[in-house]
Image 1: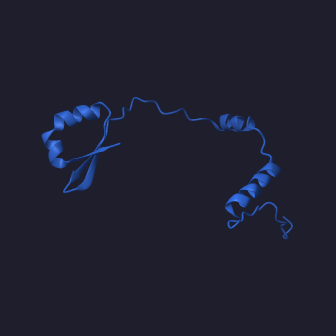
Image 2 (image 1 turned 90 degrees about the vertical axis):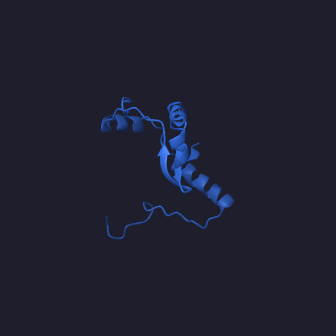
Image 3 (image 1 turned 180 degrees about the horizontal axis):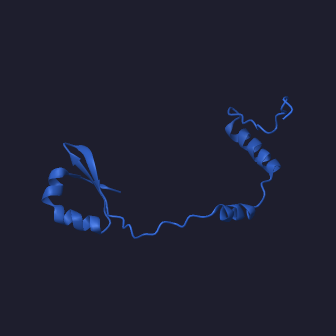
Length: 102
């Protein structure tokens, strides 16, 4: 949670505030009572980003997922409708018959 400090307090207590920021605290700086800046600890650029996964790796992860039980999903949805109401009917676009022969 960020502490709120005025511009004057930042100017007068800058050494102490900077020590606190270095220790992990955050501050919202205000001028005339309005927030104008956030003073937060620096994030080092040396943190390596997560490696990007290839499409093949992602596909393999999906293959290991358990299959979806569509009938159970419909039962769960009907049960939820009895609790929360059915005023937001969902439509399954794949259950419709396409009359265009596609």
